[in-house]
Image 1 (cartoon, rainbow, N blue to C red):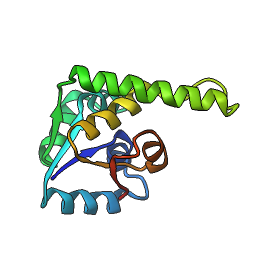
Image 2 (image 1 turned 135 degrees about the vertical axis):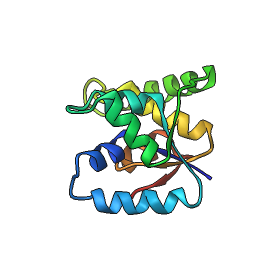
Image 3 (image 1 turned 120 degrees about the vertical axis):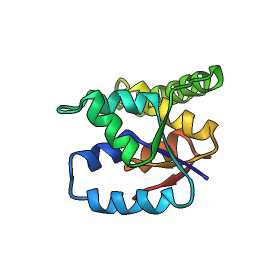
Length: 139
């Protein structure tokens, strides 16, 4: 089993938010039954967070046995684009205005789905709507 981790999960853990202990416990349990992976876009988002450096992030990922998948296939890009386009049309038709989500959210979902992995996220509503076949886990 592979578990793909969303940026918001690791961000909450790294910044010691109130749910950090529950997240750490969940990730520890998941690591016993499968691989923990992030997409390269998650790495980039985490690196952009205040106070993060390449050294700090690499050390954290190494200590937690979280791998980084740097590859993005044509299939993933196409799935990302289709999911984002569907979201943009849905938001516009609902009167919600222009899209507010960033493309990386859709790249993360498409990546997890292409790997037939479980996505660990704190934003299950978005992924349930945009990737209905994706298995989700909320820590």
